[in-house]
Image 1 (tube, rainbow, N blue to C red):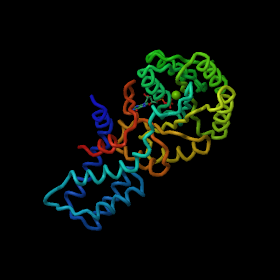
Image 2 (cartoon, protein in one colour):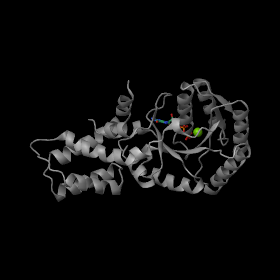
Image 3 (cartoon, helix red, strand yellow):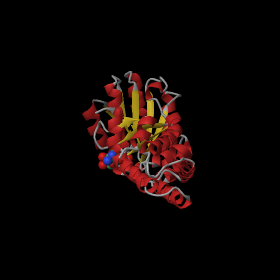
Length: 304
Ligand SMILES: Nc1nc2c(ncn2[C@@H]2O[C@H](COP(=O)(O)OP(=O)(O)O)[C@@H](O)[C@H]2O)c(=O)[nH]1
Ligand SMILES: [Mg+2]
C-alpha cells in the first residue's frame, strides 16, 4: 500500500463524515445564507476550528455551484486546497532535523495519548533508515510503562535504558544520554509520564530533565514532541496550551486518527498554534505511524 492509500485508510472515518456532510449540504440544497449557516455549524462540529469554518463558509459562499450539475470535485478541491495551504508550511522534515549526535527527542503528552506506542513506531522508522536508536524509559511512575517500552525496544531492535519504578526521571534521561553519546547513537527518544493533573510536578520534572541532559550536551533536548490524541477533540487544544507553558514544543504528533470522524482537529491545531507537525498515528501496530504530508492529509480527508 502506498503512503497516500495509508492516509486514506487511516482517515476514512473523517473523510466519510466530511464528504457526506458536503454531499447533504452543498449538493442537495440551494446555496443561500441558511445553507451556509448549516455548513459552518457542520464544520465546527467536525472540529476544524471556528476560524477555519468561517473562512470556508466564505469560500463556499463565493463559489458558483450549479445544484443540478454537482461539481463534487470542485467543492472537494476548495476544501483540500484550503487545508493544504495552512498545513504545508508546518510539515516537519525529520531528515532535516539538526544533525546533533545523538539527536535527543523528548516525548511529552498526557496519559494515554499514545506516547510510548508512538516512540516505538517512530524508533522503528529511524531503525529502518539504518540509524542507531536508544529509548530512555523516563516514565518511571508505573513499572508497566517501562515494561511496555521494553517490549517495543525488542520488537523494533532498539536499545533501552531504564531504572526501577519510582526512580528520578531526570536521572534516567541522564543515564540514557550518557549511554547514547558514548556508544555513538543517532537518536535518543525519551519517554515521560504525563500527569498534567499535577502541573507543578510535571513542570518541575521537565525542567529537571532538560537541565540534566544539558550537562552532557548543551543542545539537548534537540526536540520536544507533543503527542495529542485526535479522539479527544477540543481537549487537545487545551493540552497544547498547557504543555507550551511547561516546555517549548518543537513538533506535534497526532495519534488515533483512525479512531475518530473528527480528524479536522489537526487543522484547528495547525492554524491556531503553527507548531510543526511531525507524524500521524493511524493504528496500534508498529507500521501505523506516518510522517506528516499536508497534501496527503488534505486530499485523504475528501474521499468518500
Ligand atoms: N487506534 C489507535 N490506537 C493507538 C494509537 N496510538 C496509540 N494507541 C493506543 O492507545 C493506548 C495508549 O497508548 P500508550 O502508548 O500507552 O499511551 P501513553 O500513556 O501516552 O504512553 C494503547 O492502547 C495504544 O495501543 C493510534 O494511532 N491509533
Ligand atoms: Mg506511556
